[in-house]
Image (cartoon, rainbow, N blue to C red; front, side):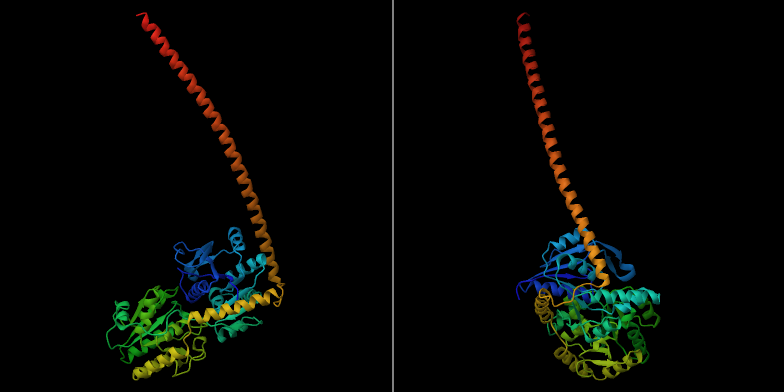
Length: 470
């Protein structure tokens, strides 16, 4: 495929850290290494530093909604940003969020006529249900979500379960499974390095360590983990459960843990941005606990697998796809009793945990290089099909809105260009006027200086004349 210019749009990007922002970061870095060009388009963050990336990051205006949803909300229809994107000569737009990012992608497509690909990473119907209490409004928001997704030229999901969720929200089109990868190499860190990077918390030697990495939200199955830890403690088992992450429910989760009397056994660490340190924690733990039915891919499960750490997952969840019980992971029912029972069984068989961890490393690990190269190859097919007219025309009801948005933005941009030309003309006229005035002032000053000199010369002559008569 010839060199392409890819626009990657997402609602989150570092310094905001989550699985999707990590995916976009890896897409951009790897595409840039394929002799292609990648540009990330994402909302503005006040403490963002984009100077070290091997690709361009364009940030558009945003408002601070972190207390409400944990992220800043982008304001996508900005004339200056749209004008900048329009002039960037993109070949393809890849959105990683089906709401704001895809709205921006559709408006941009209307202006530059290139295909839009959407990757569906998250179960947005759950997000909608958490954000909106009214059933009627939930249904309306879900219909608009499905309409937004349907307007894309090609839709990818990160798992089969994510595809089933698309059907649940009303999407009826085609989709392809394009799994995410892991940015860790296959293998473990040196034990001394692991000890160095995980020092600080109370982790006695010989005491089993369980790990959770991710957003601290109840819907991640965290209540199941804490209740199971309470059962382990009641049975007299010694252990350490380490949670790493931040999120809107973190304070509630910590209070719930304290209420179960788990202080000292359950440890909470802030979100870790250093990837080697995260890798060290995977190498330090004995089991990774991830009883989430919310996640569509469970990228952290594959990160754990890279380090030969076995995960305990809910049977039938998206995170458990491709995992074979007792071979590449451990599967449970979605409740604390099932989790506690499985852990207690495994504590008597540490060798089983090690062997299954190695099975996970062999069976479910996939690198980002492999994942993105596969996606990049697919870009070429999409471009050929789009240019050949093989995708349906964008004539949905909501497309009219984006046509109108594009026209409105074009009018604003043209107005701004005209205003800019007028400013240039006025500036030039001001420069000419100032130059003329300055020349006049200089000429006047020169005349005055000449006259002053003449007066001084006359005064000197007069002085000499009067001096003779003294």
